[in-house]
Length: 434
Image 1 (tube, helix red, strand yellow):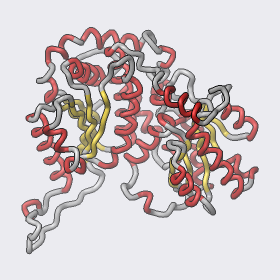
Image 2 (tube, one colour):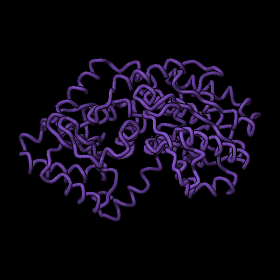
Image 3 (cartoon, helix red, strand yellow):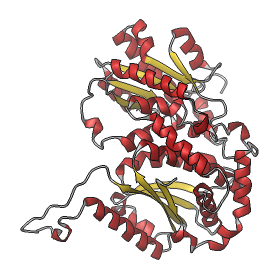
Image 4 (cartoon, helix red, strand yellow):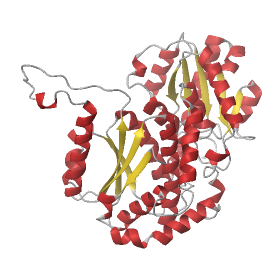
């Protein structure tokens, strides 16, 4: 896929032998994914999702989005983990950096998020914002009983019904849930909400290209047809094992570095719009690989901002880290550094240069310094931030994650450790049965 390029040259020097020796393991992992074999194969539905997504589904999602856009100033996406991170990652990457400082325009609602925490202040302040406003809800939960979104939805549903009336509220609520069972499915049927299905064979962290992610992205005004098209192009370009399959190359390189003692991967961006993409990536890899006492710890930083805070540790701290850099080739606008006759700040040497040129030199200079300091570095170049490229990037990371997890020797599609805190919390809250 031409709009996404991977370069591992600055990492290969550190673990070249390990990289060469893990080819067979990577090829076996790809076979497991493509032939629906291996641990967790009942959650392989995402593997062929881009090519299997129908135009009928896209058209229906767009119609639902249009209805919400025409009737809402705000649409609240209620969910946690994979039920909101993918949508927020794409919406933030494609939005104006200051979008939420502007008032909503007609038919251009702001997409907000709830149910991703249990903060009383957050909940109360969201209620305050929505009081007296036209808003809708997209509630996303397989079961309908996950604590964080269940609390948020109960509160927001009550507010919406109070303001719009119960009859009108049902047309402003969309439920994305199980096809047949669960509390949210039962409620949606009783109340008459429009519903979409979370496929049984797609886990939450792999669900951004299902209605879970597509509907909030469409409501935000982005082109989900282009998103799916980018994912489909990537799916086809990394279908077969080869030395040019970038998902295979990335999975092999990160596993080679892990075998060589690099236990932490830092996803780096030089574009603040990618902050929440890194949050989505952290869940994808952390929840997929962190089990059985194994797994690379996924972390992230926003450069150059964090070079003035985390930069010291990355440069001179314990040498257990490597970096994967997301680099955007083409900004969407052009802005140059002006000249100042007094030059009190001493930056006239930059006058006339594009800000992005300065940013790119900061990126290159950082790579040189970190590699010299013992930090292997991979680089993923994105042609630009648009729906097509982001769709491809999402699928690339998903496929590489499946390959990498199987290479590591774990089931990349379960998350048994997630339940531990819940059991303790329920017991402390005296939930029946705990």
